[in-house]
Amino acid sequence: MFCKIKSLFSARRTSFTSTASLAMIVKIAVAVVGVGGFLGWIYTRIKPPPPKICGSLGGPPITSPRVQLSDGRHLSYREWGVSKDKAKYKIIVIHGFDSSKDLKLPLPQELIEELQIYLLSFDRAGYGESDPYPKRTVKSEAFDVQELADKLQIGSKFYIVGFSMGAYAVWSCLKYIPHRLSGASLVVPFVDYWWPCLPSNLANEVFKLLLVQDQWTFRVAHYAPWLFHWWMNQKLFPSLSIMAGNMDIFCQPDLEFLKNLPPNTDDTPEKTRQQGVYESLYRDIMAGYGKWGFDPMDISNPWPDNNGVAHIWQGFEDKIIPYKVNRFLSEKIPFIRYHEVKGKGHFLPFDSGICEQIFRTLVTSESRMVSE
Image (cartoon, rainbow, N blue to C red; front, side):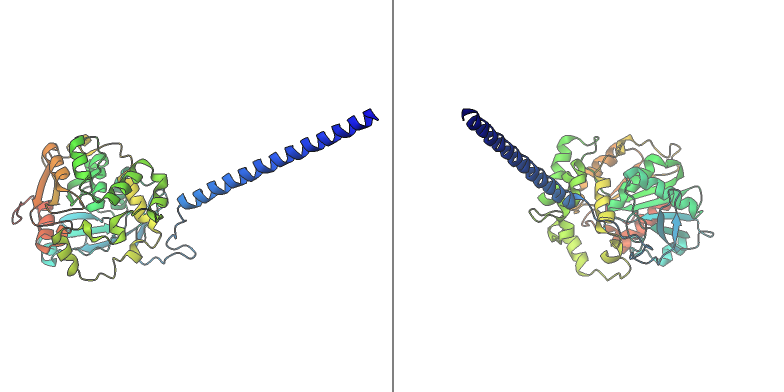
């Protein structure tokens, strides 16, 4: 009888142990599923959506001429001015943030014909009708410019003009393809607040002039680009002011300009972002505030024989690009000629008189008429 009771107790204990083990396994499984689900939820929030490639099934149509690069990508371009066969000066125009090859500059036709200027603008990678480039960097921008010039056979030398965010492509060209440049202009040029060449007190001073939401956006782009898609789409904190329509980023001259801005049906957000906001705007910011591998003061003089010059055009009132950094760079880099325009902001190049001076000065080295 005792043996039977002992056997029954042992069986019950074994059954209880098995039940406890099964319960533990279930709890672990539930925890794993829960953690996996949470990680999956996080992944869906930080993973960018696939691009809508121009010319692909369901993608936007191709309406502009394009060249195919050696890596298989396409760049969309626009030629204007006099024909390249008759041109005395050939200029590649590099658009800024949330813009395209179709930006309208108030460049007088009389000036184009007087100086015999051929102009070539293009959609930077991911913008407009140019293919996205997941490996896009500051460096890759220079070689896109060089290959575009070669595909269109505009010659071994050319001028470049970069506006705002597009100016980092100009710095890249000055670094990586200086032998191809006759001259360069950086107009209201982009500033990376993490350039090693900037004194920490200057970098901190100008960085704090930005809206707080922009400070955080640029920090995320610089330190955690893998989180950038999530940051730009989360609703807990405000992100990039210019995309949120926050007018506080504009100085008074810029606000006055916006009131009278004529419509441009060719250069609209719908067209510039049509392959996806991540591939155009977000990658642009991440490239600009990412790892450069150099800073402007690492660049050797592209024109040691004094047969060329780079210009910086800066609006003194600009709140988007504070003037102090570009003024500092111009004082330290000997091949830079600095033009600081009083009473103007970030839309400085859309003043017809100043736009004319930017292009005339680029190709003739004249610098007059502008209050500096």
